[in-house]
Amino acid sequence: MPEHDPRIPADVARASEPSTPRVRKALSDSVYEDIKARVMDHEIAPGARVGIEALARALDVSPTPVREALARLESDGLVVKRSLSGYRATELLTRQGVEELFEMRLLLEPRAAALAARNADESQLDAVEATLEAMQALPGPTGPYVSYRDFAALDQRFHDIVTEAAHRPLLADAVERLHAHLHIFRLSGVQDAGDPTVDEHERVVRAILRRRAERAEAAMAEHLTRSLERQLGRFDEQ
Image (tube, rainbow, N blue to C red; front, side, top):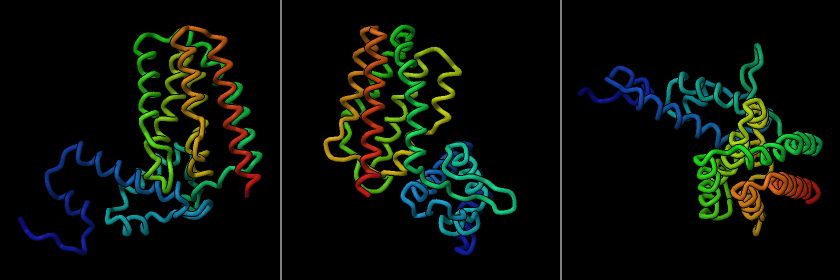
Protein backbone atom coordinates (compact mmCIF):
# COMPACT_ATOMS: atom_id res chain seq x y z
CA MET A 1 0.00 0.00 0.00
CA PRO A 2 1.45 3.41 -0.92
CA GLU A 3 2.51 5.68 1.91
CA HIS A 4 -0.09 8.26 2.94
CA ASP A 5 0.64 11.82 1.78
CA PRO A 6 0.47 13.94 4.97
CA ARG A 7 -0.89 16.86 2.96
CA ILE A 8 -4.09 14.91 2.27
CA PRO A 9 -6.69 14.81 5.10
CA ALA A 10 -6.91 11.34 6.56
CA ASP A 11 -10.56 10.78 5.70
CA VAL A 12 -9.98 11.83 2.06
CA ALA A 13 -7.18 9.28 1.80
CA ARG A 14 -9.46 6.62 3.26
CA ALA A 15 -12.15 7.48 0.74
CA SER A 16 -10.00 5.97 -2.02
CA GLU A 17 -9.77 2.74 -0.08
CA PRO A 18 -12.52 0.17 0.54
CA SER A 19 -14.75 1.39 3.39
CA THR A 20 -17.89 0.31 5.16
CA PRO A 21 -20.92 2.23 6.36
CA ARG A 22 -19.80 1.46 9.91
CA VAL A 23 -16.44 3.20 9.35
CA ARG A 24 -18.11 6.23 7.77
CA LYS A 25 -20.62 6.45 10.61
CA ALA A 26 -17.83 6.23 13.20
CA LEU A 27 -16.06 9.15 11.53
CA SER A 28 -19.27 11.15 11.30
CA ASP A 29 -20.10 10.53 14.97
CA SER A 30 -16.56 11.40 16.06
CA VAL A 31 -16.62 14.73 14.21
CA TYR A 32 -20.08 15.50 15.58
CA GLU A 33 -19.01 14.84 19.18
CA ASP A 34 -15.82 16.88 18.75
CA ILE A 35 -17.61 19.94 17.39
CA LYS A 36 -20.40 19.54 19.94
CA ALA A 37 -17.83 19.59 22.75
CA ARG A 38 -16.31 22.77 21.36
CA VAL A 39 -19.74 24.43 21.37
CA MET A 40 -20.70 23.15 24.83
CA ASP A 41 -17.37 24.28 26.32
CA HIS A 42 -17.58 27.68 24.54
CA GLU A 43 -14.37 26.93 22.64
CA ILE A 44 -16.66 27.99 19.80
CA ALA A 45 -18.10 31.07 21.49
CA PRO A 46 -21.85 31.68 21.64
CA GLY A 47 -22.85 33.65 18.56
CA ALA A 48 -19.53 33.01 16.81
CA ARG A 49 -19.32 31.99 13.19
CA VAL A 50 -18.52 28.30 12.68
CA GLY A 51 -16.10 27.93 9.78
CA ILE A 52 -16.42 24.62 7.95
CA GLU A 53 -13.01 24.74 6.30
CA ALA A 54 -11.24 25.80 9.52
CA LEU A 55 -12.89 22.99 11.47
CA ALA A 56 -12.02 20.48 8.77
CA ARG A 57 -8.36 21.49 9.00
CA ALA A 58 -8.39 21.42 12.80
CA LEU A 59 -9.91 17.91 12.85
CA ASP A 60 -7.87 16.64 9.89
CA VAL A 61 -10.96 15.63 7.92
CA SER A 62 -12.64 16.74 4.73
CA PRO A 63 -15.49 19.29 4.88
CA THR A 64 -18.14 16.60 4.30
CA PRO A 65 -18.32 15.13 7.83
CA VAL A 66 -18.11 18.66 9.24
CA ARG A 67 -21.17 19.69 7.23
CA GLU A 68 -22.97 16.54 8.37
CA ALA A 69 -22.09 17.28 12.00
CA LEU A 70 -23.30 20.89 11.73
CA ALA A 71 -26.61 19.73 10.28
CA ARG A 72 -27.05 17.47 13.33
CA LEU A 73 -26.05 20.28 15.68
CA GLU A 74 -28.58 22.56 14.00
CA SER A 75 -31.30 20.01 14.81
CA ASP A 76 -29.97 19.99 18.40
CA GLY A 77 -30.42 23.75 18.58
CA LEU A 78 -26.70 24.37 19.16
CA VAL A 79 -25.95 26.06 15.83
CA VAL A 80 -28.08 27.99 13.38
CA LYS A 81 -27.63 28.32 9.62
CA ARG A 82 -28.19 31.73 8.11
CA SER A 83 -28.26 32.61 4.43
CA LEU A 84 -25.04 34.17 3.17
CA SER A 85 -23.30 33.91 6.54
CA GLY A 86 -23.17 30.15 7.11
CA TYR A 87 -23.37 28.54 10.53
CA ARG A 88 -23.14 30.31 13.87
CA ALA A 89 -23.26 28.94 17.39
CA THR A 90 -26.54 29.82 19.07
CA GLU A 91 -26.53 32.34 21.88
CA LEU A 92 -26.76 31.19 25.49
CA LEU A 93 -30.10 31.30 27.24
CA THR A 94 -30.78 34.47 29.15
CA ARG A 95 -32.49 34.44 32.54
CA GLN A 96 -35.80 35.09 30.79
CA GLY A 97 -35.04 32.30 28.33
CA VAL A 98 -34.45 29.85 31.19
CA GLU A 99 -37.72 30.88 32.82
CA GLU A 100 -39.62 30.42 29.56
CA LEU A 101 -37.99 27.05 28.92
CA PHE A 102 -39.03 25.75 32.32
CA GLU A 103 -42.48 27.25 31.93
CA MET A 104 -42.93 25.02 28.88
CA ARG A 105 -41.47 22.02 30.66
CA LEU A 106 -43.79 22.49 33.61
CA LEU A 107 -46.75 22.53 31.24
CA LEU A 108 -45.68 19.33 29.48
CA GLU A 109 -43.58 17.01 31.61
CA PRO A 110 -45.67 16.60 34.78
CA ARG A 111 -48.60 15.58 32.58
CA ALA A 112 -46.32 13.17 30.73
CA ALA A 113 -45.22 11.60 34.02
CA ALA A 114 -48.84 11.09 35.08
CA LEU A 115 -49.67 9.44 31.77
CA ALA A 116 -46.52 7.31 31.99
CA ALA A 117 -47.69 5.97 35.36
CA ARG A 118 -50.92 4.90 33.69
CA ASN A 119 -49.72 3.78 30.27
CA ALA A 120 -46.09 2.61 30.40
CA ASP A 121 -45.52 -0.95 29.24
CA GLU A 122 -43.14 -3.28 31.04
CA SER A 123 -40.20 -2.55 28.74
CA GLN A 124 -40.60 1.19 29.34
CA LEU A 125 -40.78 0.69 33.08
CA ASP A 126 -37.57 -1.33 32.86
CA ALA A 127 -35.95 1.38 30.72
CA VAL A 128 -36.76 4.27 33.05
CA GLU A 129 -35.53 2.28 36.04
CA ALA A 130 -32.33 1.25 34.25
CA THR A 131 -31.62 4.86 33.23
CA LEU A 132 -31.97 5.99 36.81
CA GLU A 133 -29.59 3.26 37.99
CA ALA A 134 -27.05 4.27 35.33
CA MET A 135 -27.19 7.89 36.54
CA GLN A 136 -26.76 6.78 40.14
CA ALA A 137 -23.57 4.94 39.14
CA LEU A 138 -21.95 8.06 37.67
CA PRO A 139 -20.07 10.68 39.69
CA GLY A 140 -21.43 14.21 39.67
CA PRO A 141 -20.37 16.00 36.49
CA THR A 142 -17.38 18.31 36.71
CA GLY A 143 -15.00 19.95 34.27
CA PRO A 144 -15.38 20.11 30.48
CA TYR A 145 -18.21 18.60 28.45
CA VAL A 146 -16.41 15.33 27.81
CA SER A 147 -16.42 14.64 31.57
CA TYR A 148 -20.16 15.07 32.01
CA ARG A 149 -21.35 14.00 28.54
CA ASP A 150 -22.63 10.62 29.74
CA PHE A 151 -24.47 12.15 32.69
CA ALA A 152 -26.10 14.79 30.49
CA ALA A 153 -27.13 12.16 27.94
CA LEU A 154 -28.69 9.99 30.65
CA ASP A 155 -30.47 13.01 32.13
CA GLN A 156 -31.98 13.77 28.74
CA ARG A 157 -32.76 10.10 28.15
CA PHE A 158 -34.59 9.85 31.46
CA HIS A 159 -36.99 12.62 30.54
CA ASP A 160 -37.40 11.30 26.99
CA ILE A 161 -38.30 7.82 28.24
CA VAL A 162 -40.89 9.22 30.63
CA THR A 163 -42.57 11.20 27.85
CA GLU A 164 -42.40 8.23 25.45
CA ALA A 165 -44.03 6.06 28.13
CA ALA A 166 -46.97 8.46 28.19
CA HIS A 167 -47.96 7.07 24.77
CA ARG A 168 -48.71 10.55 23.46
CA PRO A 169 -46.46 11.07 20.41
CA LEU A 170 -47.20 14.79 20.06
CA LEU A 171 -46.36 15.37 23.71
CA ALA A 172 -43.10 13.43 23.40
CA ASP A 173 -42.17 15.35 20.25
CA ALA A 174 -42.81 18.69 21.94
CA VAL A 175 -40.57 17.80 24.90
CA GLU A 176 -37.80 16.54 22.61
CA ARG A 177 -37.86 19.72 20.52
CA LEU A 178 -37.08 21.86 23.55
CA HIS A 179 -33.52 20.43 23.71
CA ALA A 180 -33.69 21.49 27.34
CA HIS A 181 -30.74 19.57 28.70
CA LEU A 182 -28.27 20.67 26.04
CA HIS A 183 -29.17 24.32 26.62
CA ILE A 184 -29.03 24.05 30.40
CA PHE A 185 -25.75 22.13 30.56
CA ARG A 186 -24.21 24.51 28.01
CA LEU A 187 -25.29 27.45 30.13
CA SER A 188 -24.19 26.22 33.54
CA GLY A 189 -21.66 23.53 32.65
CA VAL A 190 -21.71 21.41 35.79
CA GLN A 191 -23.80 20.71 38.82
CA ASP A 192 -23.08 21.85 42.33
CA ALA A 193 -21.76 19.31 44.79
CA GLY A 194 -24.65 17.43 46.31
CA ASP A 195 -27.03 18.36 43.49
CA PRO A 196 -30.28 16.47 44.16
CA THR A 197 -31.24 15.77 40.54
CA VAL A 198 -30.85 12.00 40.80
CA ASP A 199 -32.78 11.86 44.07
CA GLU A 200 -35.57 13.86 42.46
CA HIS A 201 -35.58 11.48 39.50
CA GLU A 202 -35.87 8.56 41.91
CA ARG A 203 -39.08 9.96 43.36
CA VAL A 204 -40.55 10.23 39.86
CA VAL A 205 -39.52 6.66 39.08
CA ARG A 206 -41.00 5.24 42.27
CA ALA A 207 -44.34 6.86 41.53
CA ILE A 208 -44.39 5.61 37.93
CA LEU A 209 -43.43 2.06 38.93
CA ARG A 210 -46.26 2.05 41.50
CA ARG A 211 -48.72 3.39 38.90
CA ARG A 212 -49.47 6.43 41.06
CA ALA A 213 -50.27 9.02 38.42
CA GLU A 214 -50.96 11.98 40.72
CA ARG A 215 -47.78 11.36 42.68
CA ALA A 216 -45.73 11.02 39.49
CA GLU A 217 -47.11 14.34 38.22
CA ALA A 218 -46.33 16.07 41.51
CA ALA A 219 -42.82 14.58 41.71
CA MET A 220 -41.96 15.73 38.19
CA ALA A 221 -43.34 19.21 38.86
CA GLU A 222 -41.30 19.40 42.06
CA HIS A 223 -38.14 18.29 40.24
CA LEU A 224 -38.56 20.88 37.49
CA THR A 225 -39.40 23.66 39.93
CA ARG A 226 -36.31 22.95 42.01
CA SER A 227 -34.17 22.65 38.89
CA LEU A 228 -35.39 26.07 37.77
CA GLU A 229 -34.54 27.51 41.18
CA ARG A 230 -31.02 26.09 40.91
CA GLN A 231 -30.54 27.58 37.45
CA LEU A 232 -31.80 31.00 38.49
CA GLY A 233 -29.52 30.84 41.54
CA ARG A 234 -26.54 30.63 39.19
CA PHE A 235 -27.63 33.86 37.52
CA ASP A 236 -27.82 35.48 40.95
CA GLU A 237 -24.30 34.29 41.78
CA GLN A 238 -22.98 35.88 38.59
